[in-house]
Image 1 (cartoon, rainbow, N blue to C red):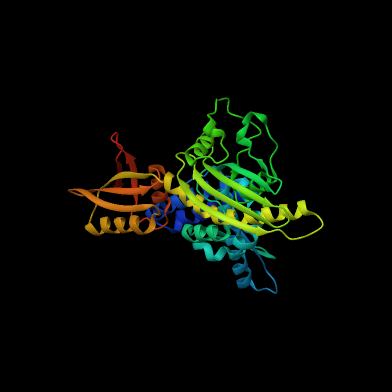
Image 2 (image 1 turned 90 degrees about the vertical axis):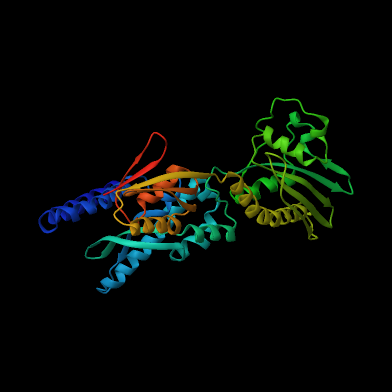
Length: 413
């Protein structure tokens, strides 16, 4: 399908350029070259480009289709644009969450996100249109509003950190009363104990929220363990050490107490595996419904308690991981060939208002027809530059080079 779209676009662009060669001045033609290049780049890259990183993934070029009914072309065009917005949102989600994320959150996405695509679109531009006897097709560039999407993800409990999925190790004991049976796997990690019902529920529910539970049965670290690390009531630093042994990002530590026929008490702490610091701490109790199958009723109560805790833990864990991983990059830029102070002022305002992740822009040096600034950006220099040069509102045209000292030079044309 992509190949056929690309061929159609090639034919259409060739026709446009041929007409322009006789009706448009050369300088105006040159000004459209970046648009044509970006158009080909966007269409020729795979739609499900999971490898794309950074804020460039929020700008998408898609083709929407509307059916012409009763000769109403205007309505068909509106339908085509609406279809393009939905397709743009689907592509954005695939890039942002990856295939596994789409699978994990599919029900939430088709119910709560995709149908409300227009609410999350910052703006869109119609680039081209094509009409047949029965359909109208519109080529649309869609820009997704990241802030709105982050809020939507938080509302419906979708893990979205802009990184690989968060790995969680569960160190949760199961205590059954009045039988007095206590089960916890770290007492004998080499014993390859089967997962308890509590662990099964933890794995399933947290996986539904997009986390990656560490399967302790697959590999036991070949190391010695102190008596403190085998204690039922682990200190947080010992629980964190288990997390590091299993290469986890987060440790969920605590206990599930099952009082037969009455109630389930679940107490869990979410910890940073790096140092054992507390992300969140919750206690949840659920009454066990009486019924002929006590085991099934107990399991339902366990799942209900853990689901409530997972819903609270998810945004707290995401925020905690993001806070630790945000890196601020100092980007040095020199604007050469400035013709007025307004050009500099417009560029500074553009960085502060349009480029997501910019926290400050400071003037550092002034020379004849040149001005240097220092930009603080939450992300890498590559992500910053990608946003700037691909932004449709970039207020100046410039060739960008990088000096040996790492400074970016914008030679204004």
